[in-house]
Every structure is written in C-alpha cells, then in structure tokens.
Image 1 (cartoon, one colour):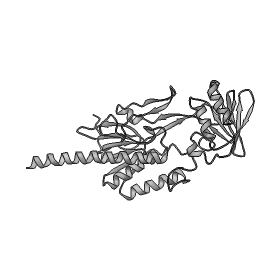
Image 2 (cartoon, rainbow, N blue to C red; image 1 turned 135 degrees about the vertical axis):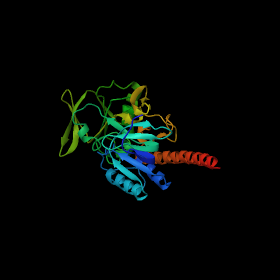
Image 3 (tube, rainbow, N blue to C red; image 1 turned 90 degrees about the horizontal axis):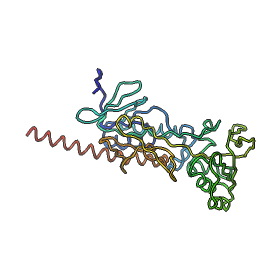
Image 4 (cartoon, one colour; image 1 turned 180 degrees about the vertical axis):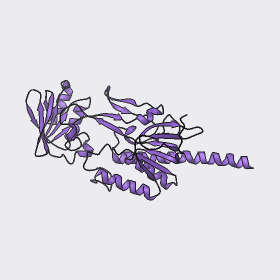
Length: 325
C-alpha cells in the first residue's frame, strides 16, 4: 500500500465527474447528510453544445449554466468540490478507497461514484471536429428541432447509417445519405430510403465547406459538392474509464449489428459494479443517456450508495454496542 505523509481528507462518498450524473448523485447524497467531495476536471462532454434539451423545466439552458446551478445546489447542502483530475484509485485497508489526483493531495472515500462519461471519437474528416455540436451532430432528439426543415446530410460510417437517415427524416424532408466509405445499401434499405425521399450519394467525403460561419456543404474526394446545413455522424463512444481500470474494472466493447460502436463499464441497474463500494452512472455505463437520463441514473446510484452505507453504519454500531456491553 502506498504511504502518504499528509493525512487524507476522508468523505462518505467521493464523486468523480461533475456532469449531470455526478452532480445529481452528489445532491441526493448531501441531502442524505453524507459528506461528499466532487472531483471534476472541467471537461464536460457537451462543452461544444449551445443548449441542453429534453430536460424538463431546463430545455434550452446552456450546459455551463446548468452545471453551475447544480454545483451551487450541491454546495448549498455542504458538498465540496476539487478542480482536478482523478488519475487512479486504490482500496484502503479495512474499507474505502484512496483517490490519487493529478495535482493535489489524495483524498479518501468510503464509497466511490464514478461519472466520468465518454469521449466522442469522430470520423477523420477535416473540419469536422471544429463544428462538432454546432452543425455536425449525432442525436436527433438533442438537435433535431434546431435542424428542422434544413438540408441534412448523414455520413455513413457504421451499421446505423440508414436508420439514422430514416430517423432524421422526421425533422426534415431534405435528407441525403452520404455513403462515404460504406457499402451500397441492400435492396430493402434502398426501397425504405427511396420511399421516404432520401437520396443516396456515393463517394468519400474529403472535407466540409463553411460560408458565413455556418456549414454550407461537404466536398467529395472527386470534387463534387453536396449542399447541406447539418451533417449527421456516428461517433465511436469511448468510455472515460481510466479510473475504473485502476480498480480492475475494464470497459467492454458495445456492438450494434455486429459492429463495435463504443465501450462502457458494465454495471447493475443501480450502477453497482463488480468492485464492492464502486458505482458508476451516466454515459460511462450507458452510451445513449441524454442529460436528463444521466441525472436520473446519478440519483438512483446515490440512493443505492446511501443504503449501502446505512447497512455498514448499522453493522459498526452493533459491533460497538456488543464490544462495550
């Protein structure tokens, strides 16, 4: 076991990740009169998005404002925050965990809630990363309303491309499927796309075209130009699971139609992992969670953590009573 000269601050729960899942879990825990520390490295997944959507009573709120309001609520009940990166965790003798930070001294928690989310790995098309979350999109429920009635192009990079095109057709009659490096759709998919008026354009996409600060189209390798005002892509959703890996929890590959689409840390319905005392919530374990879903998962995990701590507190109290009797 690593020795540290400085005595560690110890909490009932250390929450790693200050997004919707982490803050919602922290809020439920501090309201349960638990001591809570939230470690946040300031890299939210939705930092490029202008607005948060489908969050009842908060639809349209900028993500930064939503997180700031959440931090204020947690702090109002006594929750603490550290702006740092949790690089590893290790079990402590007896129970609990020591969390090692990139810059500050280590901290300790009886339980861990890991909500570090995921990374969107985009296709390698020049200019795409710069427009991610603005007019390069992936989720119709997050951005469909804003892209309604616009020219929408769907970049085929995975098994869900045809399904994506059909889905986005709900928001616009002008939808084009760009085959890029994908094979030609089968006859049944061709018929489904044609029935919905979705054009299919072969050829690899070589870059994006921007005019007046907005997406104007894509440029194909053969020089052709396809006009569009929104470009839909399917990123690879990779769990930010380094902290979990330090505890022996490996992220597993997620597949769709037999093809890998990302990775996640497996967990039970409450977020409990295979390591006793460690819970996960949000996109690190559920790739499809939107903000409100991640928030709900954080609360569910918090309830399970508090229940587990109640059991431990009771066991310790019984042992103490017997020892002093």
